Image (cartoon, rainbow, N blue to C red; front, top):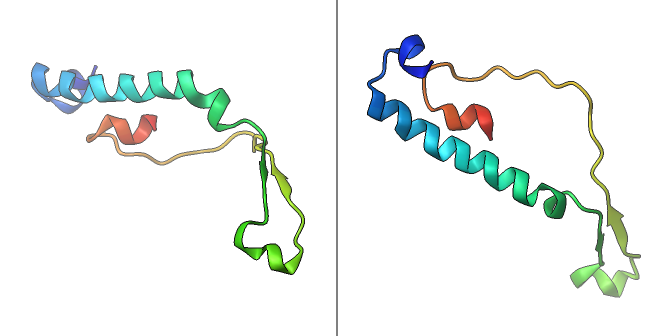
Amino acid sequence: MIRDEVGKPRNDSLGELVPTLDSIRWTVNNARRVLADRRVGSGWQRFMLLPSATVSWRPLGLVGMIGTWNYPMLLNAS
């Protein structure tokens, strides 16, 4: 599809596809760990007696994106 739409040679198309698939694989394998709830301490601001907090990721819902159509495909997949 990349070759047909953009007119790139086969090797250039594969050169884009491999890093894109690698990025998607990394996301699938690590998303649970990266998006897990975590406790955040006050760090260097301890002297201000700030309490620790919990960082929680919540979905925003549907998000639109205007992406590149010609190069590189990795930008649209990340």
